[in-house]
Length: 516
Image 1 (tube, rainbow, N blue to C red):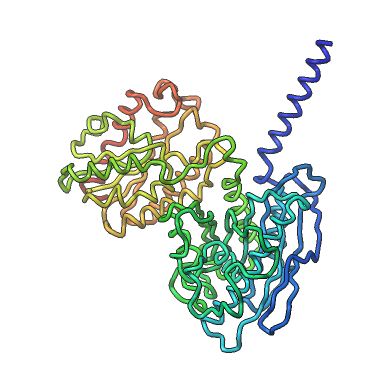
Image 2 (image 1 turned 45 degrees about the vertical axis):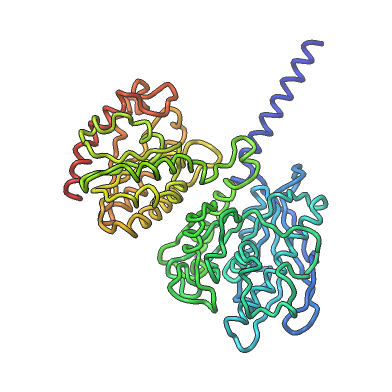
C-alpha cells in the first residue's frame, strides 16, 4: 500500500516536472510541429467605401493536439496601403505559423479596404479609422467565443505589417481625443465601430509593429499596451523615424519606441540597418524579425508574472526623488565625474577611495535595468555638468524568463546615450561592462554578447568608451572567484570592490581628464 502511494507520488511529480518543463518552453520555442487551421470564419460585417455591406472573415491557426484550455492569441492584420492585399499573404502566414507552433492561437483577418479617389491625408485617416474598427471587432470576436476556441481573454495581442501595423497602432493608441477632425463619425460610427460582436472589450495586451507608422507619437501614453517595433532604416515607403510623411503618418517605429521609453511603456526595437520596406522581402531578415518578436512577446505574457511580479518602470521613484533632492544641495566642480547605474554602483561604499577620485556624483539605485535607466536618465544626469559619465547596469540578463535579448540591451544603451547627448554632446560616456558572477553564471554567454555589442558600438562612436574588468573576477578554471563576492553570490564584497577600483582607476582618470 505504502509502496503504491510512493509510486503514485513519483509518477505525479514526474508528470508535474514534465508539465513545468513543457510550460517553460511553450510560447518561447517551437513545441508543436503540426498546426490545425480553420478558414473563412465570419467575425463581422460593415458598410464599406462603396456603400455596400461587406462581410469580414478570418483564418485561424492553432497547435494540433493541444491540451491547454486557454491560450493567448495573436491577430495579424495585413498591409497593402489600405488598398490591396488579403489575409492570405505570405508575411501573415509566416507570423501565424511561427506563433502557433510556439503554442499561441493565431489569426489573419479581413478589413474594409479602399481610399477615396481624392487621396487626401484625411482620406487615409478614414481608411485607418475603418480598418481599426474592423480590427476591434476581431478582438471582440475572440472574447465572445473564447470558450469555443480556447482563448485566454486576458492575453490578446495584435500584429501587422505596413498599413496593417498602422491599423494595430490605431487600435491600441487612438483615443477619442485623438480622432482626426475630418473623420465623418456620423457616416462611419464611433471609434469602436459597429462591425460586430458588440458588448465585448476590444482592449489588447500588446502590439507587434512591422514597418508601420502612427500619425502622432503622442497618442501613446503611460499605461498603454506594450509595443515591439521592427523596421528597416532605409525604408522609403513608410518612415522608420519622422524624416518624411506617409499620407499623414508621421512617426515611424523608432519614434514610437522612444515614446514608449519616455512614458514607461514596455517596448522593444529591432532595426534592420540598410533594409527597405518589408525588409526587402529578404527571407533571412523576415525570419529574424519574427524570432525577435516571439522572444519579446514571451517576456510580456501573463504566465511569466505568476512567478515574479511585473517590474514597473517607476518602481524606483522613491530613490530618484532622493536624487532630485540631493541635486539641489550638492555642489560639484566641473571636474566631478558621475557614476550611475544599478546595485553594483549603489553598494560601492568606498568608491571615492577605491578610485582615488574625490569628486564623484554617486547615483546607484535598485536593482535597476536599462529600461529604467532610459526612463530616469534626464533626472539623474541633467542637474550636473560632469567631466565624464560612467554607467553600470546589470539586471537585464539575469537568468529569468523576462530576460532581454542582448540586442535589446544594446538598443536601450544607444537610446540612453542619445538622451544624454541632447544636453551633453561631447561629455565622455563609459559603459562599465557587466561582471561575471556565480549567481548568474548560467547566462554569462548572453551577458558577454550584450557587453560585446555595446563595446562594438562604442568603438564606432566618438566619445563612447567601455572598460572590461571580467578577467579580475575569473579564476584559473574560468569561473567566478567566489571569495570576491558577497554571500548573495552576485555583488562584490569589500575586497572585490578594491580590485575593481584598482583595475579601472587609471582609465577612469584618463577619460575624466583627457576625454580619450
